[in-house]
Image (cartoon, rainbow, N blue to C red; front, top):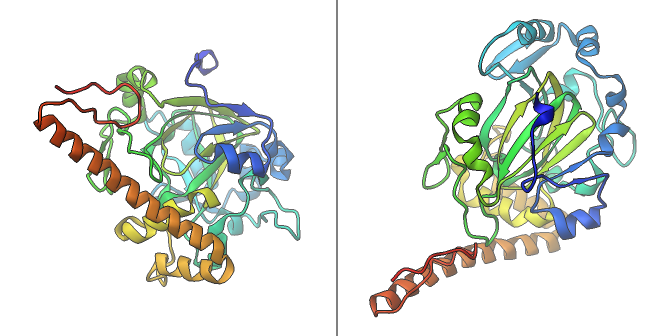
Length: 343
């Protein structure tokens, strides 16, 4: 049983709640689980598979590449014996289900955890990229290793069920890059990610090795809890039982430079924006300039520091090689304190 899964030194930290100040000063770069906010949602009191079937049974939802009425998907979910079951993952669930999201002026069906603060992509209004999804799936369903789109951060709230998460940092801002998780292959520009294994195959073949790797974090998020996914973190998620969840991507101030850099430097990897948005980077800069000029200045400065940091690392490596050629030793210096000197 998953409840006997032993997680010790890699455990994702758990808190009752955090303030926005605590998040901004200490936790924007780290995963954590909150055990309180979701339990206050109206939908937490009412939602179950049976309730959703009764109210939305004939409503079409996206299950990977297929649109199915919910009652057909639930029949599949409960009868399938697939190794990697189809996963309901729908980004238009709020209007489909006539839900409301809490705003400063009115309560809603659910409330994004307040500690995450203001989502800077919200200034784009209807031109923002897709950012929230309803997720329903059986035991064994989930997602293989990936990073969230457009360098955004995310939260994932479990309304019913339980999910196992295993996560790895990849480097953010001027931090040096980390290698991808074992069994995951990434192109040089990180635009293509290949993981030839199913979740089950990865867990059987690489899980033990992954848990020993520096930087690995893992945990089980159960119903009524919400997990924070920092910008740029690799994560694999698997449902340990029949589950319902809501996830939302957002841009906190601490990662504005990362998002700006991604939109500017990797336009071919930008996703989720409406077709009429020709330049997501240009649009975001324009809106930030009008609404938050000081934040934009800080974000552009962070973006410049990020580029300078990468250049500095290569200069250190180049200079080290020069010293090596002159008969001294050097370290690659990627910051983990365990580099071997090369004679």
